[in-house]
Length: 97
Image 1: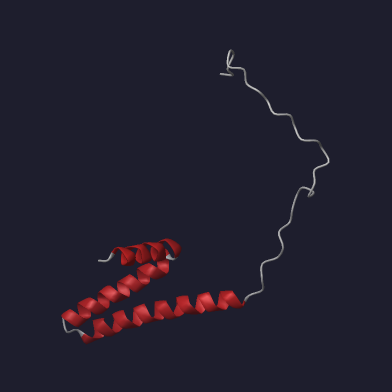
Image 2: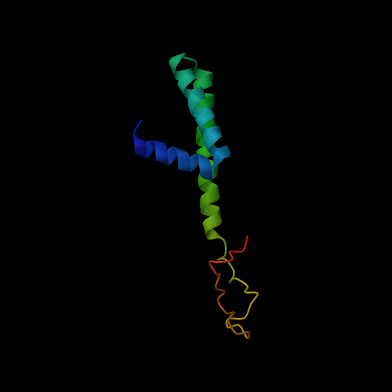
């Protein structure tokens, strides 16, 4: 397997583990059904994988239509009213242990 395919698959599993698992199960069922000449298992595997892909595609497109994220709330004012604290110098003779 090419290194780029491994990276793509790893990133897909990290982002969407449930969807990736369902797609993998469907693909394995389809492969077993195709090799064993079992039509129902092949159809079930293809159907499972295609439904999982379709649901994930629908989730991606429905979330992109939503409203933009609200502006962040800041708990501190933009410029602090207190002066900046002085920098502490640690003497090398007596380190703070």
